[in-house]
Image (cartoon, rainbow, N blue to C red):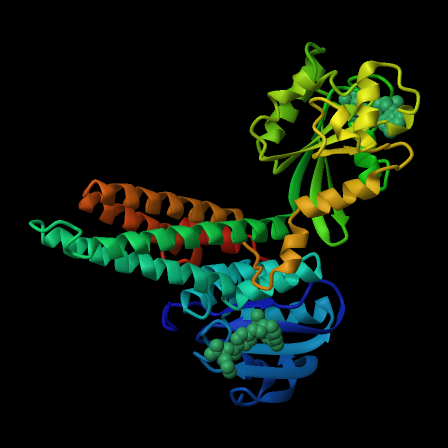
Length: 466
Ligand SMILES: Nc1nc2c(c(=O)[nH]1)N(C=O)[C@@H](CNc1ccc(C(=O)N[C@@H](CCC(=O)O)C(=O)O)cc1)CN2
Ligand SMILES: Nc1nc2c(ncn2[C@@H]2O[C@H](COP(=O)(O)OP(=O)(O)OP(=O)(O)O)[C@@H](O)[C@H]2O)c(=O)[nH]1
Ligand SMILES: [Mg+2]
């Protein structure tokens, strides 16, 4: 986008509501002229001017004006900031004055979009700006800060460059169809592909960690009716969010609750108990539970510790495709009087007497009492570890990422695998095409390959003034 065809946009850049100081930001070819008309002075680039802002002969406020001359600005266009007292009424009156002088209201994310279009930030970095603003804790903020500094983009670019070189090499070999790929450096290409494949796998794992850090873990609580799923949600949320009764089939609707565990954020979803039969309402509840499990990162399976085998079958197929499961044996407080063989087995299992127990899912089972709070500390620690928070802490290179990045990396990985196989069959044209597809998938992350609809979707979710 050049200065000639861009509108001049205006928005309040600071948070809504009253504050000490608030800023109105202008970007575009006319921003300097508009600001100079309001401030009645000449603006020198990168100079803090103390000004009186006026419209229709009336003072709006006194404040500070800053002019960033294109291209040395956040957006790469002429930018002016008018910093006034942080009154929403005053800031709105300044925006209105800018509008009267020819600026139009900025769409959400439009400043960042212009920064992207003018090459100041790539797409992953622009997304990191939004993630930084939305970060829920220090760790997420630090990770977003790294993505904004290009830690993620640089690694994506490095692999993309490697794929481009490999493709050029393969295409050169196509032009010498008489020779076999091996005489044309096939070994080198194979090594390059193996290296790229390994780098993409590592990047995919890191991006998945970054995505969890940004989005939090999506954990769905499932189990047979009456096992204490809603009680567990309440215990983890620390409030009586869900209705609890001793009637099997109490919960029907999904109930979402965001929980913060020592910095790690996770979304907990309470669901209807799964069992055969039930009335129409209960069956609809079970359908919703199964549907929700398709989006889950983690299934928290709650069973009655006195008879964990009961009801397990009804749950098994529903959780089959969930990437991770955590087994909870609830109602530990009722265990000290074991009434059945199963209970004795469960009790023995939780005493750590693993040898005596057959087929109990020990390693992944946590014994708790939602009623007394026993075992919740252990459960917290497990959830924190499953959320990736600890791994993220340990790694200096952690960056925030989004589901669309993870998806693009996965596709890039598949294309590189395809290229390897095709190269093995001397199908050079196909290999070149796979390498192009892999390169394009990586380009979606940084926005070198970015359809308008994608940009609209991404920047449309930013806040106004950003
Ligand atoms: N007052 C104010 N504070 C702010 C911002 C802002 O727009 N205004 N930012 C907005 O998000 C962030 C800082 N980001 C910025 C990024 C680039 C440039 C800039 O002028 N870049 C020029 C010059 C670089 C240089 O001098 O080294 C450039 O890239 O050419 C300014 C702010 C946070 N703080
Ligand atoms: N003793 C004891 N009772 C519990 C515990 N957890 C839940 N209960 C009781 O078990 C019954 C069922 O609890 P809920 O939390 O409603 O169970 P649910 O799994 O959500 O049940 P549905 O919504 O019907 O699927 C209630 O009477 C709870 O008070 C526990 O740790 N110990
Ligand atoms: Mg319930």
